[in-house]
Every structure is written in C-alpha cells, then in structure tokens.
Amino acid sequence: MAGNNSTDILIAGAFAAFTVDLFVYPLDTLKTRFQSPDYNRLYLDKATNAVNKQVLFRGLYQGVGSVIIATLPSSGAFFTTYEGVKSTFTKYNPTLSGSSSALLPQPLIHSAASSIAELVSCAILTPAEVIKQNAQMVDTARGDKVNATLQTIAKFRSNPLALWRGYTALAGRNLPFTALQFPIFERLKEGIKKHREDRGTRTNTLLENGLITAASAGTAGAFAAVVTTPVDVVKTRIMLAAASSAAEDQANDSKTKPKGPVDATGRPVKSSGKGLKGPVSRKGSIQIAKEIIADKGVIKGLFRGGALRAVWTLIGSGLYLGVYETGRVYLAQRRGEDIDDEDI
Image (tube, rainbow, N blue to C red; front, side, top):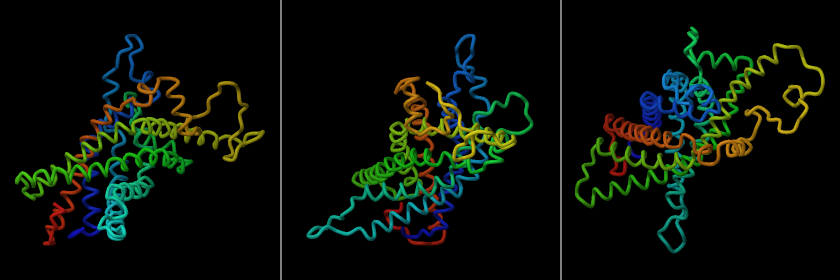
C-alpha cells in the first residue's frame, strides 16, 4: 500500500472505531436488549403487554467506555493484520502456468485476510464485548451510585478469565461476517470507481474516496449482518450469561468447599433430571440455537433484531471503513508521500 506505514493504519483504524462507537452505539444497545432472553420481563409492560419505551430507551450509552478503550487497539490490530496479510497474499500469489491469471482469486484473498485479522481483533475485543453487553442490560433506574460498567466488572472480580468465555462466539459471528463483507465491499468499491471513470465523473479526491468507501462498506455490511444474525443472537445469549456465571463462581468461592463429587472446574455435580437445563454459559452454541428455535421459531428467534442490526451495520460500517480509508490516505498525503490511484 503506497504511502502508508503501520502507524497510519493504526491511527486511522482507531479513529474510525472511535467515531463509530459514538454515533451508532445506541442502536447496538437496542439490538442487545431485543436479543436478550429477558426482553419480555424487562421491557414489556405486564398489564398491557406493550413495550415500556421509557425503560427500553434508558441508558443507551451504558458500557460505551469499555468498548472505546478496547476497540482502539483491536481496530488498529485488525487493519494492520488485514492490510499486511492482503498485501503478502497478493504479492506471492502465483500465476497459473501458461496464463496471466493468479492462482487465488482476489475475493478469496480478501476473505482470508479479513478472517485472520478478525481472529486477532477478537482476542482483544472479547472482554470489552462481554462487559458492554452486560452493562447495556443494567437497570439504572434504581439510583445506584456505581455506574453500569463498574457493576458489571465487579461480577468478574474473582474470575476475570470468564471475560473470554465469549471469544469463540464472537469469532464465530465475526469470521463469516467479515468473510462475506470484505470481498463484497472491495468489489463494490472497484465497480463504483470504474463506473465513475467510464462516465468521466471521477474526481480522485479524498471526499469522493470516502463516500465511495462508505457506500460500498455500508451496503456490504448490511447484507452480511442479516445473513449472520442467527450467530449474533447466540453470541448475545452466551455473553449475557457470562456475567451471571461469573457472579455464581464468585458466590461459590466465598463458601466452604462443597462435599460430594465435583466437575473439572471444582463445581459440585448436580443430579440430572428430565428436562433440566444448565446455565447458558455452559452450553454449546448449537444447543442454545436449538432452544431458541424451539421457543420462538427460526425467524422470530434466530433472526430477532436482524433489521435493527442491518441498519446499525449499514451506518456503522459505512462510517468505519469510510473514515479509515480517508484517514490513512490523508495521513500519507500530509507527509508528502506519493499516493497511487488505487489508494484514492
């Protein structure tokens, strides 16, 4: 990538993440509340069975601090890895014998690069996602002096490793999402640029580049968001259960060591009964998905919050990648570096 170094990518990625967090965080909070298994109990009026808007829309920025702190390094790590892997794969992509065509098609390279980058990013982001989603569900109407984020963190005090219980769920959602989004995004971006060049309306300015990137990223992101909503619903259930599970661990640690058989984690083994359900945090993703389908059905259960997530991603991805691409080119230009046509 001409004119850009790792510092440019880190700064542009972090600034893009910060911008998105501020603008679209309330939509993410609403999505979490819609997907929560406690939605009916917490946000529906028992007398009228109507949505209690005052409660639903209260505290929409709860937990935003933890996300901002984590997304700055995670976003920088994602884009640094993505650009590095994409550049390396493209550089060493062999050509087919007797042909000028490359062995690996460009969409496959984009998918592989984004997937590897996502695995790195998720390792940094998972604790913040767990804290964020549980903080989004805290009822702040009780007048507690401690804010929602600190209340959530306190539940993990004796077992901080529980913050990473949602890693596989987060990676399981983000991997197919980025693998879908980035090839579509790159293809749409190049298609729009070519269309404008053919019509003679291409200006090659930072503003044009930012708008093209935002439109392409938003469209690709909205499509990928709808497709991966079922995985997102399962991820939300797992992460919301992590806090209650950590609180249970903390309570158990404060008691005397239980008598009788214990499992590998030191918890007492409960006798299994017919239809007995264990904590969500101990269940696998498939088991949780089956229970959601049995309770609500495929559409109302696994695709709950899909429309809201599509809107949130349309805005968020557009801002995220639009600000990132514009930022990295601006930083390179500011140093007086030469910018290739493909970079603007």
